[in-house]
Image (tube, rainbow, N blue to C red; front, side):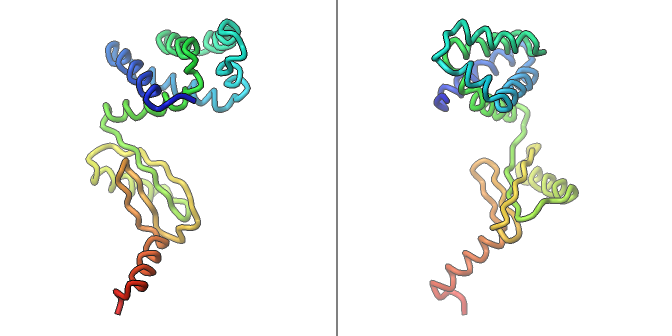
Length: 183
């Protein structure tokens, strides 16, 4: 794992190159696929990120995967550079930040939604439309479930938190009763 400042620096560098040649979205897709591959293959990640093995050995393992991949040459070279600089262990952070940067360029924002129960497809669409109206951006939503909310939902978009959960309302009522504000 590498620091967030370093992850941001690498993500910005790749994005800058991608903007120059107009392929930044393709590079983001390749980076995301590699990150998912690493998450699914922990043994591979343990080898390429472990400095116990020589750089040549780790490069050989990485190259064996990259030669079979459809990744752009620039992305392959970027991944080799990460390995050379012992930063390959930060691939997930780099990929996450790269996605955030491409979202900014594409006028997209992400909303994390927590609900007590699963949202139906129609409710997801209506919620996404409402959030797009609120933010004036295209919204990608990710829904998670938390039964402790009892009902309602919590929406997080960047620093903005909209808490419409029954749990939050009950907590608010409890605090009001403690202060004697309800008659």
